[in-house]
Amino acid sequence: MALRLSAPQFYAERMESLALYVHWPFCLRKCPYCDFNSHVRELVPEAAMVAALRREMAWEAARLGPRRLTSIFFGGGTPSLLAPESVAALIVDACRLFAPAEDIEITLEANPTSVEAGRFAGYRDAGVNRVSIGVQSLDDSALRFLGREHSAAQALAAVAFGRKIFPRLSFDLIYARPGQDVAEWKAELGAALALAADHLSLYQLTIEPGTKFATQYARGDFVLPGEDLAAALYDATAEAAWAFGLEQYEISNYAKPGGESRHNLAYWRYGDYAGIGPGAHSRLTLDGTLTAASRHRAPEIWAGMVADKGHGVTVEEVVGPRDRAREALLMGLRLAEGIFLPRFLERTGVVLWDAVDSGVLADCVDAGYLTVSETALVATVDGRKRLDALLPALVL
Ligand SMILES: C[S@@+](CC[C@H](N)C(=O)[O-])C[C@H]1O[C@@H](n2cnc3c(N)ncnc32)[C@H](O)[C@@H]1O
Ligand code: SF4
Image 1 (cartoon, rainbow, N blue to C red):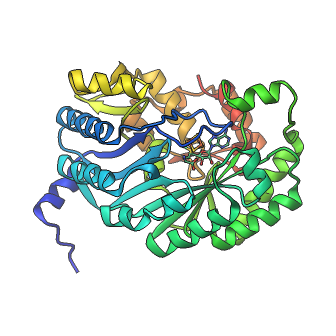
Image 2: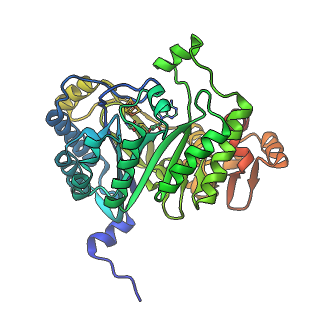
Image 3: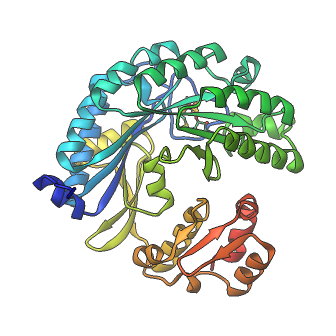
């Protein structure tokens, strides 16, 4: 049967795609491992901040022109502290300012306290069709170590409840924690997989500069698993996920076929994305030129800038061919599908082979870390484990 599209859909199909990120920068408490742009405030001026987000979105849409909106992602911070009405207003604006795709993915990051789970139905009614829950661990002592506000039981309840409400659901766990061995992690992960819907994000604990953990770690308050144990934990993660039908489509992300985060795929495939809100980043094609922008990180200063001139952009620069190629390689090699060569050329204007060291490329292919075909450059399972070491030598 011939596919019939309505007029707006017909035009939307022909427009350039856009992924929209909305940053909510507030949290109830700062987790000691986290270096995201998140702030704790006694009183959060929600109405004024939401008004500023709406104004900045309108400013961005006005200069971007018509775009096919494929995803919206509410990230943070803790966007599940927002009232559903605020989320609804932002979604209505986004769908009015841009041309929403038929199958638009609208994700909201949620913390698993009971209060936040209580807003799930409101978010669904606002148009959210996917949640990503920050479970972090199913072990209460690990949750205390990670400085979380919730217990394992609350997290389990939030996931079970979320599954009843949202067609798609993901949750995050942090592993390679101090003292964790493979057997313990397998047991914890097994319990998580039994609850999983179509997606999981499984991150190795990293010590980010400037965090409380960075100070504690430097002082020797705790030690992290060594390289061999960390590698064994990583391998055990992919194996267990696979056994549950979740494929490792990106280094830390696992999904059932079709359950991949379309929003995050836009980043990794080096598509256009607009970030609004304090500290948000964008990569946007403006008048045919790829441009990188970032916003002021401090919520109050950002809001003041939006009030003055409609946006909080502090830095905006053209991304030159060399940087385009570098960024597309760094992102694309994280994906199991790798980099599609015609798309790389179209997006960066650079032939991929001109952006890599041919000797290092040949060595990586010989060692089984990369594969090359007529259409794609792909990092193998072994290659993806070594990406941090490979990329500086490979990418010119
Ligand atoms: C923006 S944060 C999550 C948002 C939400 N406020 C929460 O805490 O659930 C995204 C995810 O990154 C992961 N993450 C943040 N910092 C990390 C670190 N230092 N090491 C490993 N994972 C980290 C956590 O799993 C977290 O859920
Ligand atoms: S991990 Fe989440 S809740 Fe914790 S400080 Fe970061 S953004 Fe906030």
